[in-house]
Length: 126
Image 1 (tube, rainbow, N blue to C red):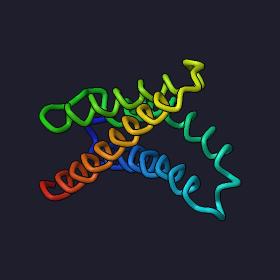
Image 2 (cartoon, rainbow, N blue to C red):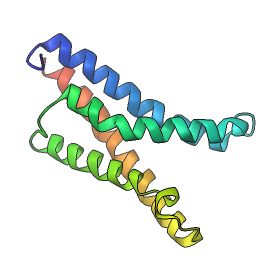
Image 3 (cartoon, one colour):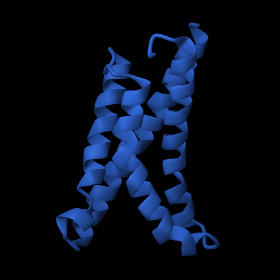
């Protein structure tokens, strides 16, 4: 199925929407009006992050080459980092939390930039 152009576009849209939706947690946490939804949004964020490799696999069974390989490595590294959040490692260290958060958000930002670059390249060369 991944050889079909329409399949790749629709599965890519699904993966892109998942990545974009994950940024809603930042919006909810920083907005005073939405902050009351932060805990429920955090749970959704964690579950979607946990299943994100499955969505990635639905879109592409390979890791790609060049920037796509970099995107894949960073995507999976960020997913693994997300699996080992402070709830899992049972640590309340403020320094560890800040370091973890900076790493997670930085990788997420790089993923988003590479995703947009990938979308531009796909539609530019097709």
